[in-house]
Length: 113
Image 1 (tube, one colour):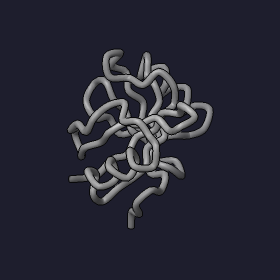
Image 2 (cartoon, one colour):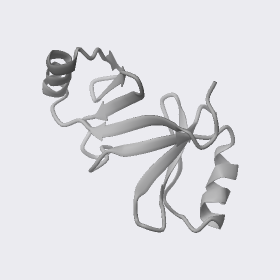
Image 3 (spheres, rainbow, N blue to C red):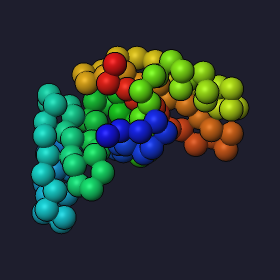
Image 4 (tube, rainbow, N blue to C red):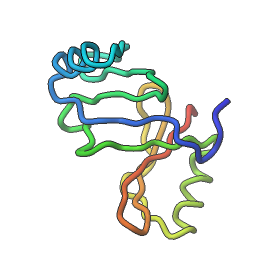
């Protein structure tokens, strides 16, 4: 069961998805699920994915936490001193927002609803 505030997913820039999938498959035996031509997900001890769309890709690895109530968690982040860097938006599979902590680290929080 997913729990609020726990690390749930890690997203990486994808670049050439074919090359990325070939590398991780050959080097570590990873397998992938394609979610369209620009995104490949993996589950190798921790779920994650690679985003190849340059307009959507993160610039460095992005740790993604989970929340049952996304709006309530966004309010908690702000109340605790975080800054919302990308307001809540929908994506295939759910919704999420990005935030920066007081040290400037960017993370995200997602929910299935």
